[in-house]
Image 1 (cartoon, helix red, strand yellow):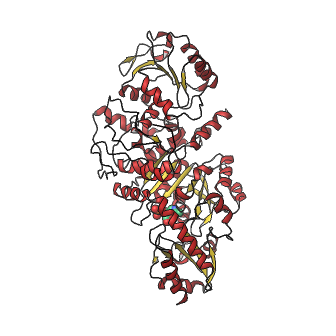
Image 2 (image 1 turned 90 degrees about the vertical axis):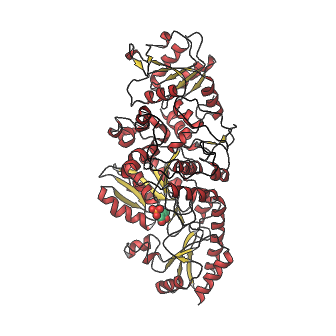
Image 3 (image 1 turned 180 degrees about the vertical axis):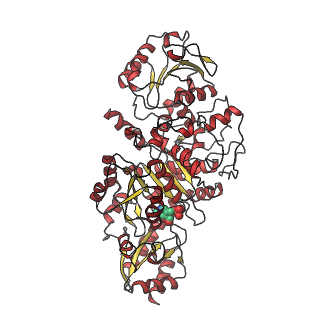
Length: 426
Length: 194
Ligand SMILES: Cc1ncc(COP(=O)(O)O)c(C=O)c1O
């Protein structure tokens, strides 16, 4: 019963999970049920009215998912979290709480290609207008702020090039603008970077990647840092105004420093519907137990392979923040001292054709559109994940035609290097 | 007491020891936070007394409203103040005229008055500010984990099934379950601004 703070690896195994009250089961059970019985009419009314803690229906919450939520909240140093069906679902649910039609949000130009698509096209049809800024030029964020700006969105380690974002500098811009900073921490995972420690107000993840870690389950999560004051200026009516959906409850006043997570659950997930399957939550939870071990191995392997590639005659350049001379190596030392992640790009002297040929000759690396798997992965972004962008936008987001992206797994690094060696020299 | 970040054992000690709670500013309107907290604490076995001069003659979940702390007519262990920061001082001053004194004065989420806290502490009363007893009870019992909230507790012990009307154990053999220091820092900065 001491107030001693446990370490990261202890939290990765224990946070949120206690033995099952009914059976004593020690592993978190998969509560594969749509619904939960009420004790009586008053209990039902209390739950629907948000007066009591408890379960109603799996679209709103589920005990297996709740363990995952508490686990990731604890790892990120947040007050609460909400798990959803995918990383993309997390992004929609977050922005739905913050933006009204006609509002704007500022996003870093260097993002996962799918996020660029979601922001540019899908969100436009909701009337949410993205304004792009350059994460390598902090003043571009300052210049992008207008009275309609409601949030700033960045990635901690940015897809696909593995560049490191100066979270603190951008959080200063957000604070001055009076808007929350949202950080997609997918590629770093909280083992490498905890964005809340650097000023993030909301953290989102695609759990599909390193947190789940085994390439078997889609999932997403939203973590509330409990740092943003939603009540000022009526700018965030979902949080500060009486909600007609709940007979006039004001969420910030009622739930304090985890009101944002509650809003995402009771306004976002409940009404938009992208619920996470409890089975996926179980798979991802199991993955998280070994996150510290895996992530360190991912990073150590990635560094060895980046070093190998930078010395190879067929390679024009390697962009990995863990290499000493890299443009982002200073930021990497500051934000990710344990390792600069395991997703990075390199370009081949032979251009587009050499990239296509490399991918086809690799035998251990799998050619697919994912990152953060135990297995090593390879892709040619220009023809796949970033193919919807025009050429200039491809280059701006680090996915030019000669660029190959790797996601390094936890195999033996010697085998991965041998595979690259044979494919490059063949 | 450092009112920016309370140790779990301080809050746990309070919630484990108090039995009767007078709630100043309790509302009969069932979407108000005070109603939520009143109902929850009553269901967890606390002896609740609603205090609100605007509702004398009515009842809150079967408990008659009293107009002020002077009208309680019996000793209470804790006074839970559901008023904004600028209305705290008079309530604390009134509480200090009670005999016996309450053991605890608790100010709700969003409410903080350091001068009032100092007066109460000088009289030997424990003070909690800017917290909700419902949330703290739910957190320490881990009941709040159903909502994906970081309870900041870890335990390898099997908990009881939470049923209505049952006091839950707040004494989980737990270590602190990780920090939410960023949130505490933000609350402190906000308080220093105002
Ligand atoms: C950085 C990043 N954010 C978000 C996503 C979207 O996540 P999901 O595929 O789980 O919807 C991805 C997926 O590739 C990603 O890499």
